[in-house]
Amino acid sequence: MPKIDASNAAALTTGETRIKGAHKRTHSRIQDINRQKILDAATKVFADYGYHGATLDQVGDAANMSKPNLLYYYSSKEELYATVLERILDIWLLPLKDLDVTKSPEHEIGAYIDEKLEHSRLYPEASRVWSNEMTAGAPKIKPILETYLKDLCKKRARTIRTWAREGKVADISPYHLLFMIWAVTQHYADFAAQIESMLGKSLDDKRFFNEAKKNVKNILMHGFLGRTDGKS
Amino acid sequence: MPKIDASNAAALTTGETRIKGAHKRTHSRIQDINRQKILDAATKVFADYGYHGATLDQVGDAANMSKPNLLYYYSSKEELYATVLERILDIWLLPLKDLDVTKSPEHEIGAYIDEKLEHSRLYPEASRVWSNEMTAGAPKIKPILETYLKDLCKKRARTIRTWAREGKVADISPYHLLFMIWAVTQHYADFAAQIESMLGKSLDDKRFFNEAKKNVKNILMHGFLGRTDGKS
DNA sequence: CCAACATTTGATCAAGTGGTAGAATTCCAA
DNA sequence: TTGGAATTCTACCACTTGATCAAATGTTGG
Image (tube, rainbow over all chains, first blue to last red; front, top):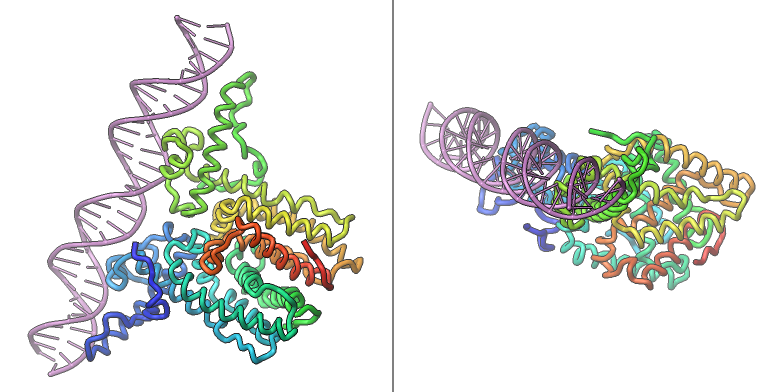
């Protein structure tokens, strides 16, 4: 079981492995394209069937590629899955890196919620793959969580605590605020089937998306700032 | 693929099938015990490995039982899984049935959040099995969602809207409020691995549990009621 | 204790799946 | 054009796993 170590967390999301020697340029294009195609296909298949349920044949089909050919690019199912997870984590953490303590907490957190919801709308499969991995106990990506994610969140928690100390926001625990934002925004992607069963709507529906955004921001910002407002 | 139909949603969570004829009493006890033991074991295994990843051997081991014997009680993996899901749904919906429009919304919603959090603490595996099924698109339990859950939630939404009409709560969409409560409370069970990787704590930790409860209720109730307060 | 039924087990199968080997084909620089 | 590397394809294997079945063992009412 080749767990993921933190050193290459943000690396090899594209196909720039093995290119190290000197020249090599023309081939890498076809590699990049195929690797990208495979990762996209794999994300969808893993989202629908989970790690164990997904088969390499399915991924191959989704990528218009034979299974052995797929294994030419990613030498095992685990390696493919690990790469998918790393790519997701990178996108997942991007907006969190931007939280700026010098700016207004209302704007910063509001923008963060916006971005997270937008992410759920644009990449629901990615969110579901992530959810699956977490639900299963993060067997493959725990090492990264304990270093990369842990450190980043500690910094952001400090930012939020600074805001609280300055009386700019309500006195809430930074971590629980983050958890709530993650939980709520990702719920619309991860539990889309449940929502759709009840309402027949998903984030693809623009009206529903805006309604969700309005309500989520209203409640969260309300509690976060300790006063009303927080409109989209 | 024997999907689940709504007629037996709340039924056969125990082992009272096939007992219909007349006498039969002594045997049903052993059946009840074993069925219960199997369901408990299956819930844990399905939570850790997902439907596809779980093997009947694992479930058998966890229940101290051979695989063929297990199949004597549940004639297929799918039937076992379906039964597990039904049992979870029943527990899952219990607290929602109690929402009483005649009582104070602050108390009712507060109690509901308490119960959901308590559920995440006591039955995290159940929550994770459910999360897995939803994330996968609810392939097995969608029929029930579209009838049973849909109807129940429509009623509760009416309750919340009544409160809003009477000016007792803020003007928020009932469904989104429910979604947020579900998302947040279940997050502590479903993403326990993520939380534990970052903080080294889980709901098992009494202090952390109370901290989570305080923050969650503070923010949600704040937004829900349109004013401060909402302490545990 | 016995006959009838319920439960358990070991042996086994068929299907599906991750991964490999090596031939065949495509691609590209010189 | 051509030689060699990169890519793709056609079998194929080893192994897991859900499911079956007949025999064995346990259990109970009479």
